[in-house]
Image 1: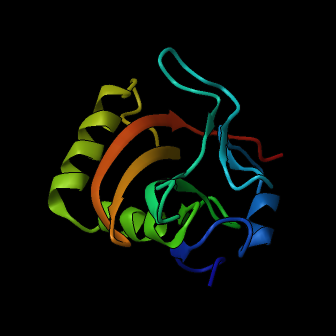
Image 2: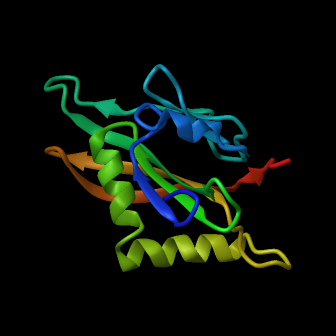
Length: 152
């Protein structure tokens, strides 16, 4: 399928470990400490994002997710990866690419990054997800980074 189609995957490199082998330098990566590391922080961005838990109940209150769009096995097709640190973040990432208000906001951000060739073809989006009672309630786009393809 990766050779002949565009593919959408749910879950991070923890469950799709072969995805990291594709030749793309990613700014946002998942750490072994259950956080998202920002390898190239821009002004106002942090270098690490971790989920936040309620101290009394242990329930998650805040999660983070990454939407990654990068080339698949061939340049003719794309791979989209929707993955949160926790299930709530993954759910929010899926909502972000299927609900009009989120798609409009993302499209606007990508348009602002346009150059002579248009908006970036490959990119990563960092999302902050507010969670209430196990349900993602508010999704905010914290950052959008274009990806650099390093195919030989």
